[in-house]
Image (cartoon, rainbow, N blue to C red; front, side, top):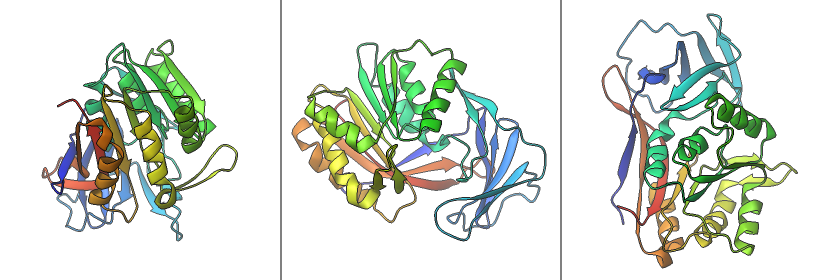
Length: 289
């Protein structure tokens, strides 16, 4: 149970970590290059020719907000793709660009375990890139996010990908409350992906705090699975929590299902030197090798 796995997001045509170091990372999102703070990039840069379109400057508080300084013109949003899934990127006030590229190995893990007869749910689904990656298999999806703006963006991405007629339910809901209702309805799913924030608010002002509410939510997710289900994927960002801790949580809540649990770190591979920059921790259950 104590062995840790590193999941590595490799560069693709529309995204890559060009270089990192000196507490920053230099990335490409299609034709747009950005620099963002990265405390874990404690090494020197490999290159001295960084030429970003925009640089993110964090605020003095710890809520994750800040502002972008544009050195060159950046469109309000622009189109990217990964495989058949197309989606919009944009400069958000929370330092990211409206999707999380390091999730790519998790998307592929889920895709390999779903098919046209599958039912899956994406909690805290944000702008829907992961939902659309899973939907491309023909599976029926439930996409849940508390932000109407995010769900509207996810719907736009589905239309951009030509997947607007795919069997996806787009729900503006509090993830914990919705999952608890699904347990009471005795629903089941073949796969569940959840990517909860550290803090959050539901559409009716519901308060979400990861350390307090993660264990009950994971328990409810496990109750929606059975021995024929395929996976549950949990990813955690920006929190003082251990992969061993969330791995044990997932192991205990899925013990009745059989299968296996793996846990560890997520990382992205830098193009300049091939080194790995850690981004998050994860734990996932699966009964499929």
